[in-house]
Image (cartoon, rainbow, N blue to C red; front, side):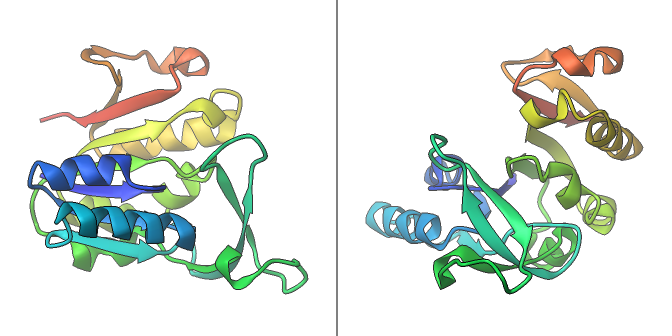
Length: 195
């Protein structure tokens, strides 16, 4: 399988997947995260099948500014760049869409980790072509922000259902979650493609 690590942070999933021989596309908006990840991959001799992208993933291509949640190491949120934000170049980036990542596919089945601090629906809605053209088998998705956001929860559920994906507990893939109880789903869920 190939890993698409969307919101890779310093690369816990990326390093593990690369270590066991999988091809990885790791995407993060924070340049410092990618610098640390790049160094770890070089030290570990794991650069050969790993691609790093310095971009947030959103629903449109747009310049953004990055802001960190106080007390949440690695927690970063994005805002469209209106030119008025007082941020340095390390906190500015160009957002791309999931569909822009299609050329990076190895044409193998895909495991996607999607953890982008409340922006999961924005990324998914730009990924119709990604899900239609590529064989996405699993999506590990952070659910915390969507428990109380009915609109994003319903949009994600609808999108994933259209692409034959079913929600399961991340620590027990045999336990399918009930759609009607999505407000009590755990913090991380895994969507598994119905085969």
